[in-house]
Length: 226
Image 1: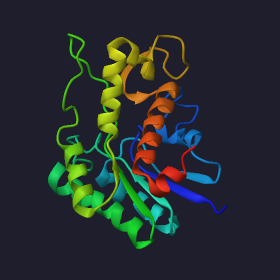
Image 2: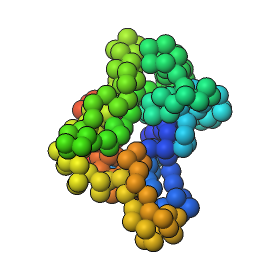
Image 3: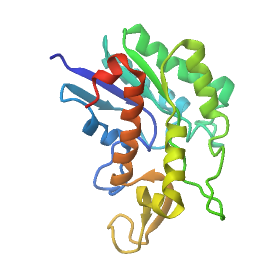
Image 4: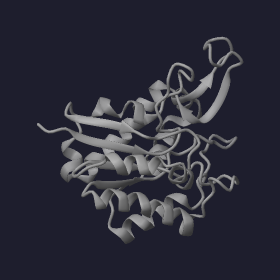
């Protein structure tokens, strides 16, 4: 069977991590666990990138140079588009949609298949144990609106992951994230509390939500998932 390639464009919640940041793990690092053997994952996601900075640093150009017919391009941005840094910041219904459209255009010109993915929900709970609403402002809504307008499939990972955290609750959902005690991991001797970045278990869990989303899209997306 011919190889199907999946290209990943996104930020640190997807990116590949090496031993220097262990146990941090991006879901793109483990998505292959859910995919059939003939699927090859090409992970271009990088820490700290927004839909804008990823393009301006030439990373979309790299995908453009290698993506071919019938490949799939998964696109997840939003975390860093919220930042005040002018090299990263976009506005949801204008520049964010403008930059996302460029990823879609790259895929379509090669007869590949773009899929938009709303940003992974940040694990933010209120003091009463309820999860905070709207931590990503209008970015998920803007992405879904663009998907409908351009007739591009999307996975609402923001909603799926929020539902998961609500089901697990404040205490148990910590097990998915970089909540590390002191002196356990060489890279984090002082420990860390990080409600954005996933550990290995969390990455496998979230990759499972992405694979679930691919199945729900049906057609060729369902065919590549185990």
